[in-house]
Image (tube, rainbow, N blue to C red; front, side, top):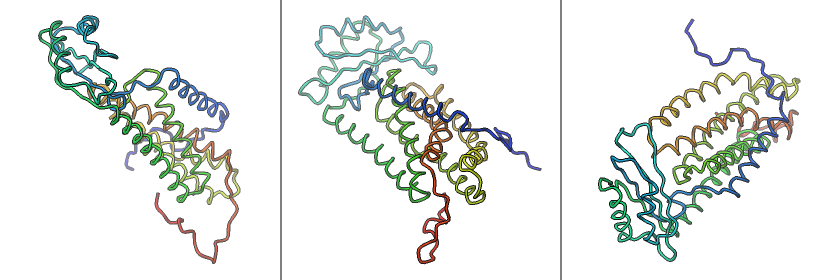
Length: 324
């Protein structure tokens, strides 16, 4: 017999509804806390959404943030943020910082002349400093990017809602999209809590989370539909528990193997992609949780019509044979 690795026993009997009210309350509390964090702390928007200029510096001497700020104090640049960047992949004599200058009123971005003045001011503190990259985005462009990002997330969620509605029933669609909204809101709340830079790469990560989370949810829903036909007299709650247990090994295997790659990228991938990888890593963890404890729990609360409905004109269901 061929060896098959299983992260869960072949026959599990976990009652995923044992703490149904508690898990839903925790999810609601996390979502409420995330919204409150957005309102109170806001997001640490990157240059894509805020507008302005980001200058990346490198040196073989330790970064002295106070000295950098003092050197730029008389330049009257408005809102300036200086942060040191840490990464395990850096060499022992490689010290990196980011200087963010907010867009000035009435201007699209910081002018090249101003950037040159900033660089000269920083060289008075550290003559060995270099400037490997400079990124500039105007306020008008950043506003358009924010709108485009919102429309992208809403459009993806709407398309998923329609697909699940056609593939299963409207109750499944409501549960699946509610779980996706749960994942997105909590993920963004974590970014607000830790003030991690939020830019276009994070929006791409959120869209990736949508696709990954709905895939896991559809697997459970598909098994649920099969079991509802097989066990017509079994209570819906028990059928849902059976379906979740039967797909548990697949869920853990998929999530585990994905996390192995993501954690490696999180540690060794460098600071440039760290925010993107962190968003996907957290999103996959919370997405797995929502597939098991949010989506199907909401479907149970809404209820499903398990009666045998006669087909109109004796024709089969249009979507009965569509593969997941």
